Image (cartoon, rainbow, N blue to C red; front, side):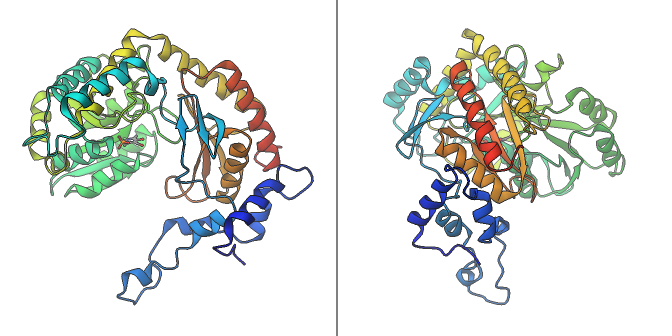
Length: 444
Ligand SMILES: Cc1ncc(COP(=O)(O)O)c(C=O)c1O
């Protein structure tokens, strides 16, 4: 039996309420008894044999079923977002589900810069960077990013997703190969898919396996190793020095996606390289403005000749509209605030440590987190959605992460922390985690 779609909201509500009353079945138990199957999130086309595309996907009912059960964790409207707190479903909640690591989305310098650029350039350049979309703010931001990372130069894309697509697809032609850490962000998988060459993978954070994979490649074949500096779901860091050494041995260049490490990792928030005290910049660094930098957009930094090539041969640069100058201006202001207010970097790192300890002490499995991203391993998808809902009902907003974002059966609750969270907010959150974790069988 499944939860029937429709007639949903009332039923979802009554189920959601039962678990806050003692002695009644938990949300997890109710959903499992009703046969809610999160596997359908894979969305494969099942009606093989039908030429009607709409028919082939009509089996996908899961979102409605999960909504009916009050367990749908996605596309949740956030009515107000102050940073450390937000308003969801008309209720104030502690925000542990954003990437606003330094709390800069509400910083006065960032807001002022965005407002001024909006007034000066309007909401859009209405064209691509190549022809009519480049403003002086884009150029200033590229210079500031290169300076921040100690790279020769940088190029700004409209999102971090496009930065990965753009850099990799420009560099890996039909004779080349992308070599991915298994756990890299989906945008790197998509980048390898867009590139004309082949791709292969190595075990997560395993330099020895990378060595074997590179040893087996044709020595004349151009290759690029692709890793995240800080992993977006596990919150763990890449062993950058060891991976670099292996790459050097094989004359192989490496691209490091430091989307989550900029502002959060390293003594001055310079990212993974600075955490390990490596002097030489990464071959290529990808970053995004949609996390610490409190905006939208992305970039690739590296040697001038390489970035010039990417600038002219990257279809995700050439054939999409430029990042609006207001977004570029916000990111530029945020980048400056990192240096002006280094206490934020220190504070978010301390909060990460404190919450890892607090959650572990409660009995949660926080995997190998070493950043302000702290996953809680749950495993079962339905239990994860039930835990998420219970936390939200009790005033804590987190992210439920299920396949395909993580492997099937390895669902996690992703939590992340902001430099401007108060101690009181996080103490309250820990108490709510403990209660909801016990109710949903995540901890004993
Ligand atoms: C590691 C990583 N790279 C790239 C991206 C894409 O960035 P953007 O949101 O700017 O498209 C993300 C976003 O989730 C990410 O986590």
